[in-house]
Length: 68
Image 1 (cartoon, rainbow, N blue to C red):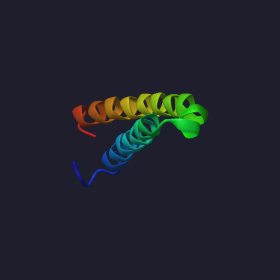
Image 2 (cartoon, rainbow, N blue to C red; image 1 turned 60 degrees about the horizontal axis):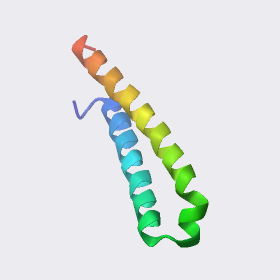
Image 3 (tube, rainbow, N blue to C red; image 1 turned 180 degrees about the vertical axis):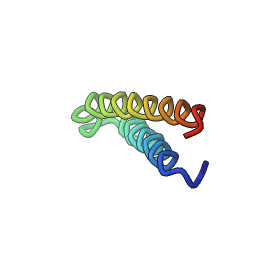
């Protein structure tokens, strides 16, 4: 599984979601001007990245089940 390039794409997508989430949580915890300006944008980016990651995970599982 680790030698499959799609695995690395899926892992990268999941890590991207984690990074966006951590930036959002950090901004929320700090508050102030950054949070007011970027909180909703970061949430939208996280939701989009999460949707892409889920589609990639489902695609990866389906491809691996079919023996590809």
